[in-house]
Amino acid sequence: MQVTSEHLHIPLDRPFIISRGVRTHCDIIQVTVEYNEYKAVGECSPTSRYGESIESVLAEIESFGNSLGNQEPKQARLDLQKQPAGAARNALDCALWSLEAQINGTAFPAPYFDIDDQIETAMTVSIDQPKTMAEQAKEYIETGATLLKVKLDSELIIERLTAVRDAAPSCKIVVDANEAWAELNLEELFQQLTCFNITMIEQPVPSGDETLLKNIKHPIPLCADESCHTAKDIPSLVDCYEMINIKLDKTGGLTEALKLEQAAHENGLEVMVGCMVGTATAMKAALPIATRASVVDLDGPVLIGERYCHDLKYKAGHIQTQ
Image (cartoon, rainbow, N blue to C red; front, side):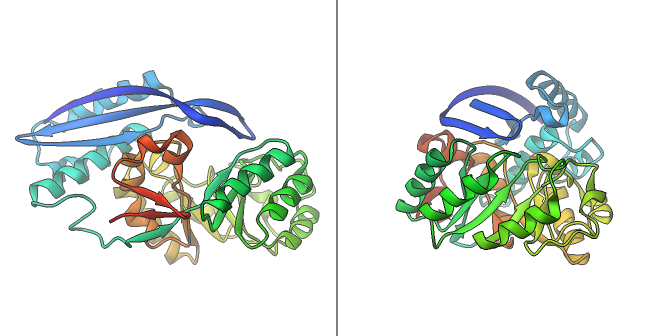
């Protein structure tokens, strides 16, 4: 089994702004795994928030790849789960799923998963001045989007949401604070936000500060993102959140993501599937979770540009998988 990797530095179509900063490029790593006559590609996005860099993930991929030896792809994928969760394991895990499918004479995610032909996905409105956010929301609505994900920090929350809601009066909206609201009066803020008909609020407080959410009234459901990586995180989230966001770069691939999905449902939590900014290669690997999720946010390729959508088509706020 031969493993090679490549770092891609790709400019975004427009700056992507969240509470932690501004991005004008995305850095992804694509891994190619060759086994006999078969070849498959996986992808990951190293994230500094989780202590990852391009260099550290490339080194992990090389180390993990060396440990796989001459095993069959399925056994290699199972053994890979002994390695730490994160971007490096994700890229290899997803490539190995694809290899298994090829050996079985089909193409991932078949034959293991039934995938809906169309899956609604959120389109992301990044942080900016209220007028600019409204313009971005309107652009998405005009192309048929039915779900918007609005990025916010701790400033101008009401003003920004008012602008977006006015631009998209009938569209579903989820809000993502990316851990930025710890210093705010959360109970008061949650009450103020009810008038915007928001579907869900994602990660209002920093990971590790979940106790800030206990015993606080929140009419809008809350979703854990940075606080939830693998199935072992679920017990600490049950009394704080109603939903978790599964991202393959956090779980370390689809194999662990499926376990996390099961653990969430067993504990009464709904599932969202999200992504880092990446190409259709990364989004396609998440489709088995997306086809069953309550909320899907897999618009990463749209943020880069249409040329990176590959064999997934984005139309009218949906991913068309066929």
